[in-house]
Length: 145
Length: 113
Image (cartoon, rainbow over the protein chains, first blue to last red):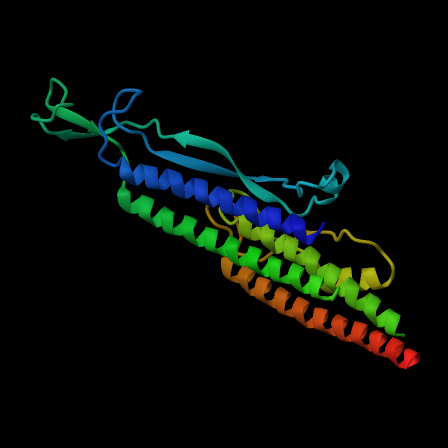
């Protein structure tokens, strides 16, 4: 239970939001990708956030146990969309099937953009929390002067 | 008497720090499905500390907030407001503590002079 633990909590939030933003950007970049190493069109990826205990790197097990109230966040899983790809009739396309349809990723770039704004706001909020914790720590240090 | 004031100020800062930690974890979990906003009963915690009970404080779930479809009820505006309030309070208390220290210092200086 210390301000340094709070720093770790905010850092975990920042890293989780950054991972989320990375995947969203990947989704937007690959919105029209029809070829992947695994075969078939690109598949949308999404993060699963989970609460997680983040003790300060110097805290022992006892301290971690006592910090039961404050929890950080971690990316527990990256889910790959297994739904049917979108089919578009493009007979001239190199990846067109015998019926003339091409499989495109099933994702909506507008949705990804909205999620990206959410991730960016979440990141900013974590930065604000960290800034204010840093100020509090700095003020405690000035007491020593 | 000065010592007592300084001690109370220190305890107040302890409660503020504990609360700041909960606010930080609420903000970190702003998109975690099923997470509920945690806070502590400020008055009770502070009174408990003054009466000689130790930290850690007991985090409580905050009721009455709108729950999203994913079971999360963190309200970003509430957290940012508390964050600002908490750090202003902390800055006020730390400058009060600084004044207490300056008072003791000047008493010592007068003894020497």
